Length: 390
Image 1 (cartoon, rainbow, N blue to C red):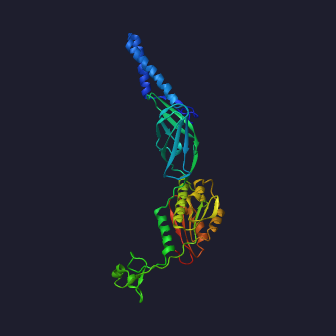
Image 2: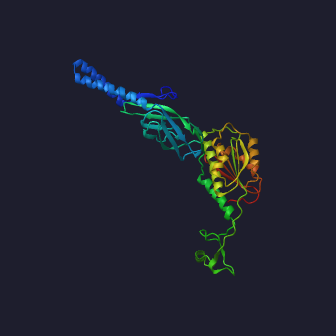
Image 3: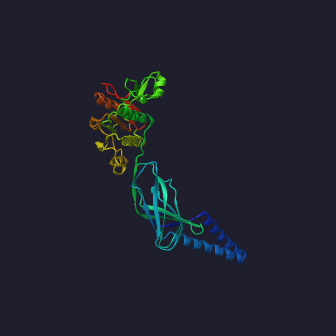
């Protein structure tokens, strides 16, 4: 706890409010003036106000005694999204009134929970909506309680130990920039419906071909027929098999060049990994991922969020130091069975995409996307054969 804070190591602290100071010094000044003038009525009124201030001090301190807080947290939340924190406050002594709870674990911008009355020996419960912006594990064993009961002359502040849930995990927020989303959607369309034909001049119509003898009349596509001025029919070719696997390689190699590695770029890189993962999960595309400390593991899809170890790993992944060139090459070789690979780093892609292209473009299939934390995207296609995407 910072020095000079009104809350010190969990002890309850009572401080003056502006209203209390005005009343106290006004009563003290009135008592002095009454003694000087010999005004008994003014002296009695001033004495009453001073006694009232003393009672307010005692009642305010008593209102914060014997409190206990129990917390209910979700197991995991996503950064940048709202979540609920359940709080229950109990009183082991008498009745407590007008309490305000502020739980730091819900975030700095979370609202306070207002409790009107706690019966003696009972409890009161409520919920606050919180939001956390940074991934990682958040832990807090205390909850702040404050009150200005009964007259607002004093403010009681205390840090109450919490029982129940003390921590939760904040998962990285998935990010898919427009350029990356276009690439992903193109890949999904190519794999699912790449063999379906579209005739020239009918870009808005897909899955049509020229009419052949024996085709049923009901299969004729009349809007396209009117556009082409010849008979065409609706026919979708069977969807192509799903891609064998997508790959994600997250590395911390700077390419042997000095560059400023900004923490926010590492966070964006992890958000990109999370975004691609969610895309593959929703599209049921098998995935292989490699990150510092996690080399070439396959991820089964679809996979329930409750059993998802990958997002937990990403939530706790820190950038400790640069990886070596050999480590990145080894991780890239582990992606040899992937049709599409996304290579992501927090460093500028111009510093390391040469290594990726030298080792990957000898292949005769697939393609690779290089991304960095600044949002730069570069597509590499094989030197041999025809790339899957234009």
